[in-house]
Length: 305
Image 1 (tube, rainbow, N blue to C red):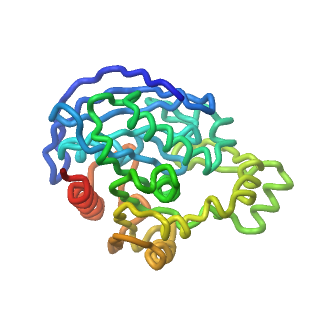
Image 2: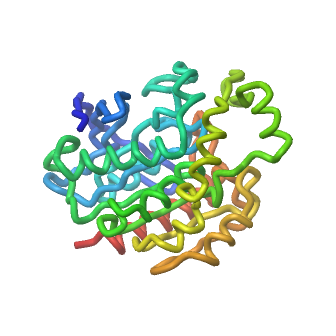
Image 3: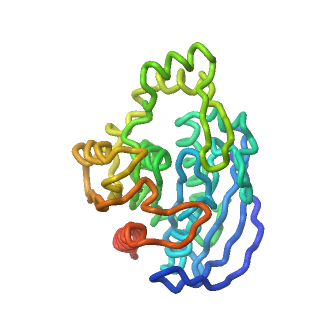
């Protein structure tokens, strides 16, 4: 079991087009995992003291907790009374404050299963009080995931450990499959021993190790997002842009077709993969505001006392 270290932040006020938000108290934390890695994150705490409904924010591939809309959705949710937990997956290769991937080995070698285990480590730390002690209502836990983080959130919500514990799930632009390479790219990866990746935001030329491809093939059934979508029981809001250039809206429709239990799909007309958000963030737009409003409404509905 890992341990968490906390550093205290301060409160301020932010005006974001359409919202006048009290910036939550922010606390940075580190959490040592059973696998020997250290997760770095931020707690965004509401004004109300005591135990509050809690949302764990899971970023996507090449994302990080300070990317684009993540601080702003955290501000919104904390201002509505939620404790929000943001953290960088080890697969990001980044720490809070980084603008570049600084741990290229972590970026290259982390698997989808590693991401799922790290979500579980965060949830377990919240349940046991090793993280955000006194600020988490352990009977009102939710996951919010974007892109790859949406896919791993769905897998987590369907897992034996968390299927009955999570009370809500929201995904934005979630992947419907982790098998994202065509046969030519897979063969290139096998020949080179790695898959070249360019981070368009930073200009960095990075790699994904062959071991990641092999892990995905070995554990294909474990990483079946559509099967997990059918198996999970947490009420799920799926949000996707009709013009998503990275994860086709067809993947959202495929997930919708198999989703079991309480489920709603919101396809935002003209929405891109990030609903128009950029990094650095320049403010929300109507499509992002629509996604944010739907998200807070869903979480308030399902995490209310």
